[in-house]
Image (spheres, rainbow, N blue to C red):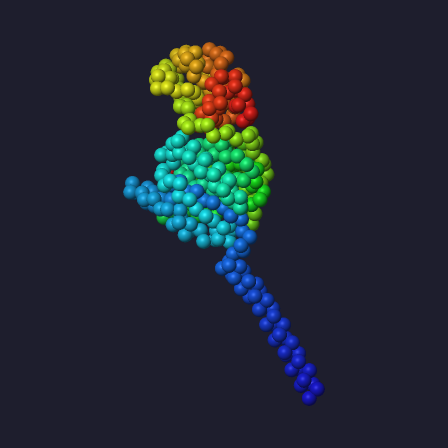
Length: 364
Ligand code: SIN
């Protein structure tokens, strides 16, 4: 009997151990599943402001593209629920090339108002068409004050495409905003698992998911488990938009051999208050165009010398047309579309080239 009892006890112990070995991991899975079904109320609050773009488009390449609302875009990202308490605002639903400077003012004010009215928000995600995403992102970087981050994202592939990037980019953008390490980093662009500073991000490819690059390198990576920041953007104080009803007209002139300045003269006649030149190399332009730029400067137009090369810098204090005119401002390492935005905002404060140069220096 004793022998049978001992054998029976050993069998029970073996079965119990086996059951525990199997059930404990299962209990863990059940706990994870129930955590996913009932996300913690402590998740950060994130506002998604939707403006349109490919991330909100179907049939993009068919010539018969249709827009979908942010509610439908979110249906492809159910995992967001476990990351943040998301609220949404459909600000617009347009291609990014339809976003105007007047819309920038509205968008920036709307985000500022939301952040003011909702202290519980960790920050804001903006969905945007990628073609002009870098411009809106830089405008927001220059005009939305405070430590709470704004992250702009989009998609290179339409919502009904193959191997789509929109849901992953949106998920990552919300994760970046929800991460406390993002505070104080201003407006960022999150695309293709990377975090880029709005100041430096630029679209460098027409179709690939890795289209966005930064001339100063990325700020960080969006890894599956965590956001890794390895660099902080510089953050001069935001421009105050309170008295601004309209942004001054600033145009970009792209130089090329034989350019005769006709475009410069036409833009001055159209009322440009500033002109940014995409010069060759370190800002050089052909002689006739240089003369036209000098005429523009003499009429009070602020001229900023940028480069069409796509990288490198032009010192702010020594920007010049070919004839050495001292009154132009160098773009530093801002690309010409970013230099245009900074010039628009600088001109809301002063049209003195020396004052504009000081503002450009602060943003290098
Ligand atoms: C757009 O910029 O609106 C179209 C292209 C895109 O979103 O990728």
